[in-house]
Structure formats: C-alpha cells, structure tokens
Image (cartoon, rainbow, N blue to C red; front, side):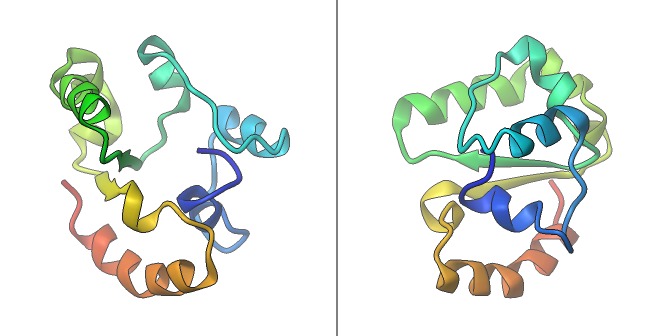
Length: 113
C-alpha cells in the first residue's frame, strides 16, 4: 500500500520512516503497487506489516509466502518484527479507523510475531 489506508497512518510525518523503495511509492502518490516476491527484500524494512485479505486465494498466497525461504530470510522476520494486520478492519483512511489505530498500534508493536 502506498499513500492510502493503513500505510498512510504508518508513514505519517510523526510515524515510521520508509525505506527508499517505499519512499518512491509515496512520492509518486501511488495508492497501491504490486511487487513480486523476488523484489520483496528491496521493500522490506526493519519491521513488516502484512495486510491480510479476507479473500481465500489471497490468504492462501499469504500462507505460502510466510512459509517460503525468501520470507524467512528477511531480517524483520528473523528478528520477530512482523505484524499481521486484518485489512478489512484496519486498511481504511477514515478518521475513526485512524483514531482507533492510535490506541491499538502500541500493543500491536509490543506483540511482534
């Protein structure tokens, strides 16, 4: 996700800093961009926030990724800094969702998987 939804709260000026590839997306004001698994290490930071879709095929693809050697090789995964987020609940830019996220995010960050 780029400049919309959950990521707009993460990359707020008082939030997380983005890596170079993510910064390119934000500067281009992209709302969404699909990246290949091979490119994932170029986008991964020291924390990973994985939005979980409610669609069965997306869930299956996510499970396959989470079992892959590529995923396991990412420093954030090795350091337990992965956060699995239900997209349907949190991937919105609405004010109420963002306000609720402010209360939930600190606990989420303490419970890295």
